[in-house]
Image (tube, rainbow, N blue to C red):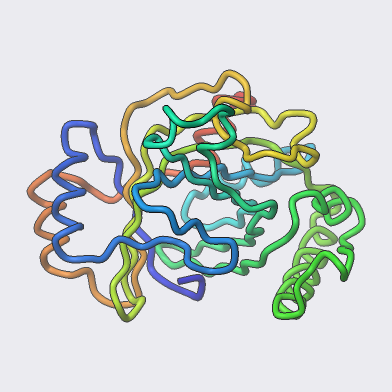
Length: 268
């Protein structure tokens, strides 16, 4: 679900997390990536490291602070899985981690509760060239993805040119993600647990390993709430509206980017 949609967020206290998981699991099917390089092993814990970009003047941060409901975010996501059941058999910590050597680059625009997203896949080790010159080696892209990536890079180049400043990795947010989706892809629910905020490491794009939390240095987690996101193209289903009401959860103007950048770099 990357086209225009309505998106609402809720901060779920730890005491209500199980109730949300049980309610959503009764009505929606767990969703996981099944494309090229997907991890087929069962019982994996799915994690995301999101890399948020900003300019030297912190233009995106200050814009998001002024208007959480109307802004642009530039980010890249790396997905990886941990297999706790393999821990006793592993001779190397990397053996319980499954990931792919690419990131999903996103240009996300928000206008009120409506969002739209340009999303394309890029090899992680190509990111320095993309950020400095807006170019990508054709050999680094699969034929099936080249058109999408080229279109995305063109949009990114035009956007960066309009800024008049370069973009660079600014803040990393790591979290475990649970996700569900209906059959028609009109409703997607995600629950992000254990958010941790990190400054970008110097060798961010040169690592031949997943961006797992333990490899990102000491992180900061200023609050214990989970983040529930409901992304939909139709009305909120009654069962979910009722559960949110029972748990006294209200839509929040929460931003992982603003929260993380505030902790890592301050608010100036």
